[in-house]
Length: 271
Image (cartoon, rainbow, N blue to C red):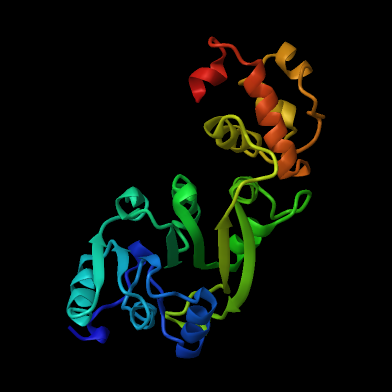
């Protein structure tokens, strides 16, 4: 099956990487070693898959498009590529954990990038690093500092679990078809935060609740899950808007609330 027989499908958010110079730069950045446990999400037509296989002893790929699965199976028939026909948002990455940490790589569709990153964070203790090609706006949100417009739920959660590094920009001309926005390469490296959150589920849900209406104060966003007495016990200025709190402050707030809640609290049932 020839490459040109497959047209990019909007429902899968497909924009195929075609700039060979940029592909070489990305492979150099990733710097794969033969024994690395690499997983490529959305290999598309194999533009990045091919140079990865030049180095790796094996490569796993997760692809939802059955036509692309067939194309890749034929194209790399004699190479150590295992293709998992699946939705990456639902894929159990535990199946690929072999005792060696996973290195995740992907040109992620813009429409699923945020939920997919949250899904992968469920496996962050088994992941060495993640290199993604994302919409520039998403990369800026990942790396945003508190008290800025881009700072939000994904900033807080991802910065708690990972170091974030924006690597380089990718113009629309690098893809076929060309998207209408700039993209960028970002590296996420899981690591322990300086303060440990006591309850990860509570942390993630609390941050989501705080940013539910980002123009409202923390007090307004939290009043549905905390009563007045509990709010008074928090060592936090609840008149602030959610973007004013640093990641460290969200961790401390989570731990304080975790200590306050009894078994009958609505938030206990919520988590």
